[in-house]
Amino acid sequence: MAVRHFLSLLDLSGAEFRALIARASQLREERARGLSHDTLSHKVLGMIFEKSSTRTRVAFEAAMYQCGGNAIFLSPRDTQLGRGEPIEDTARVLSRMVDIITIRTYEHSKLELFAAHARVPVINALTDREHPCQLLADMQTYFEHRGDIRGKTVAWLGDGNNMCHSYIHAAQLLDFKLRIACPDGYAPDPDIVHAAGDCVSLSHDPLAAARGADLVVTDVWASMGQEEEEQMRRVAFGPYQVTAAVMAAAKADALFMHCLPAHRGEEVSNEVIEGPRSVVWDEAENRLHSQKALLELLLKA
Image 1: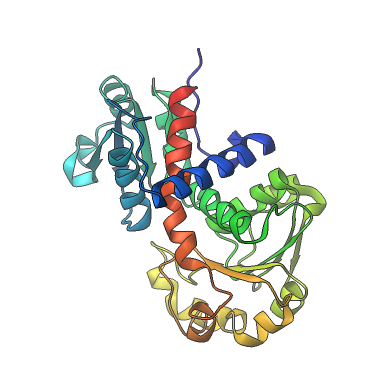
Image 2 (image 1 turned 60 degrees about the horizontal axis):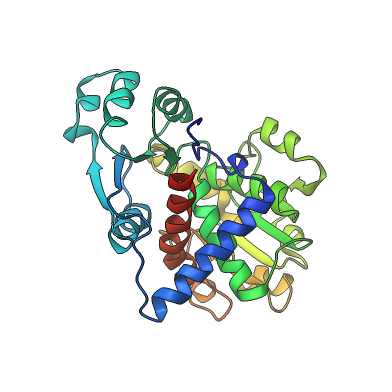
């Protein structure tokens, strides 16, 4: 049987995405009732992280432990990858020792190369191109608060980055409208936009994008590896801050999401992120439950 990887949201069908969301919500509800699971018993997750992490790392490690498995965390200084061992060789060796591997790195091509030589499932824990695990949690959170997102409108304000790309993929799979507002020079990958068809629209007007939206989402203005651009980006993205005025343009029951960490006073005002329509803490917690569901899915494949 062919190994199944999760390198992109597009590795799922729309039906699988919805089923995964339902399972994640079930796991959240059962954990709240004190129920435990051993669905990952005797399984070992290898975690290769070239980028720092809080939510992704803790969620994966906790998911394995809470479901009876174990996780091994590896940074570049812990492995021969950091000393120049070819990615292909590391993939071949590690996948003979662990049951599943998650990778957080910069270039998406590194992830694809690793997966091409692995004998076990490989999960994208974030690359510069996509962040599909975050969208599992985001969509789980929306479904839990507002029901199915089909036919709804989502406003993405800010950088056309990896999170934006994964939101485009989510719009394709779950059939919602995505309005992206970003400054000149910071649009998402045109090939990804083109492939999404008419479910995605681009503009430079954050208020127009947010008008009548059911969900407003943003991310930091300078991601990891872009620190040298921080001042230039602060100027370019200033008009795209999610403020009370932006949320007022959205529907009265619109939600606000942010994958965190957030820079209050930059991409979002403190009033919004701490306000009644912000669901960022549920969104963060759901990294745990959605990643449990994802691990189950891939290890059963």
